[in-house]
Image 1: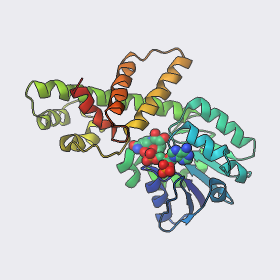
Image 2: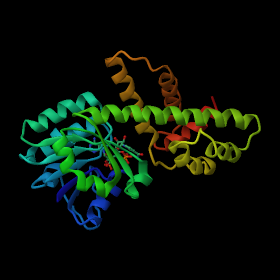
Image 3: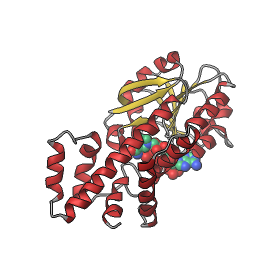
Image 4: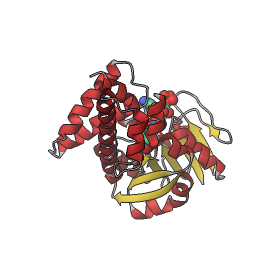
Length: 282
Ligand code: NAP
């Protein structure tokens, strides 16, 4: 397929690399110019999208997606009937409905396909895609999902992928906060962190989150796999969505304060695992 891949950050770059490796004809674009071996590089989103079958995006946030799609030299200038726009960024479900309607007004299709699996999952093509959109369009993307990930779950119609994704990240933030608080408490009580982690790994407390993060935590390696600023962005998406549907998220409200303190301490670009330091110093 002819694919335009827009956004070559921690997640986007390995996805674009895997599409090239699978033999697709890929054109990449990134806001600050970047290239991918074996792919053509375009100067603008419009140029990348011209003539593409699929335009796949993975950029930071709702504003970035809006700019890439509808800003100057945006994808919208090159939309044509039959093209599919896929958004793997984590953004506001409500905005997704608006963007999809504007894309469809030009005859193209839109699928929200945020993912989970972080940097290692993207590199090893082990992502789980959390998808919203018409069944037929999602099915047409199956060969590409297979190249990029291990599983696709279609949650429902447009926006449902983003709604479910923020719920998944709410769980990640809450599980990790539990891990951080347990480490802070037991550390002060004299339990070595490697012993607590050994206990977690051998008990019902074991989780994908602790599996992924344990080695980083033991090394105190806060290099970003999932940057803290992006988890805080997602926490705010959860809070906005909760206000819209009148749901209270008391634990998340406390967790948000920890993330704000971590940003004040200079950890915006660290991995969200750096919140361990903030919790320890509260
Ligand atoms: P990242 O490494 O910070 O990359 C962000 C990308 O967005 C970069 O290509 C950046 O371009 C681009 N960007 C930022 N603002 C932009 C703007 N205004 N206009 C155009 N492009 C813009 O982030 P990431 O970890 O790859 O995450 C990308 C998305 O996937 C986010 O929505 C994130 O929440 C989600 N996600 C991340 C993970 C993870 O574990 N990392 C997992 C699941 C989902 P520049 O290079 O020019 O800055």
